[in-house]
Picture 1 (cartoon, rainbow, N blue to C red):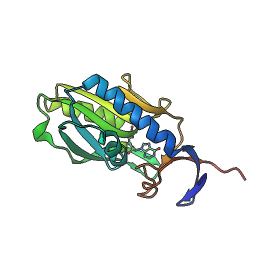
Picture 2 (picture 1 turned 90 degrees about the vertical axis):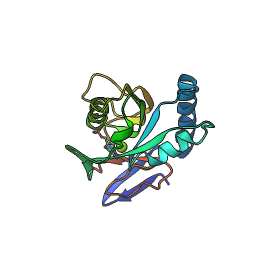
Picture 3 (picture 1 turned 90 degrees about the horizontal axis):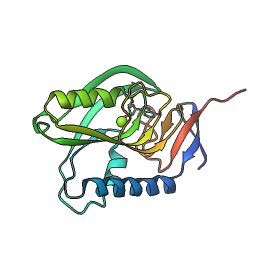
Picture 4 (picture 1 turned 135 degrees about the vertical axis):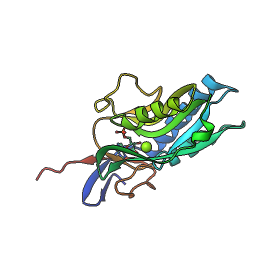
Length: 181
Ligand code: IMP
Ligand code: MG
């Protein structure tokens, strides 16, 4: 499937499922080499990162402390520029090294809000692994520490990422294209 349509918007394939799976394995090995027997507390940023995170952590054959964060900053294909926290395990943050697992870092608002919020609640160190990064839209000075793919500005869906809750189940990643008549 090279082209899809969701809610009247057209999408072209950007990254095949095979390329995604290879990259996720590579990221896992990079992280495992770095953390070895001291993996940080992993916080999966829902909903988008659920698919990526489950694949990423699948190979880990040691005890892992993992929990979830639920935030929302998108409405359709536009950032609302406002973050609402629906769930954050504040009681387990203190003195922890934390790895945030993100599907995509776009403006960086969510990531930098979370880093600040976690540090405010006593986290020792906060890093991020993100499957996708849009550097042309990123507004902060510190980039995510671990990046799968660098992409352009286009809105994407698939592999956990959605448009109005649609498209999360797609095994590949698709980018929005503007049709010219
Ligand atoms: P940011 O706060 O602007 O960096 O955006 C962060 C969140 O918005 C991501 O974790 C995604 O959940 C969502 N998001 C940003 N860009 C896209 C996209 O292209 N497709 C789907 N969701 C996106
Ligand atoms: Mg996300």
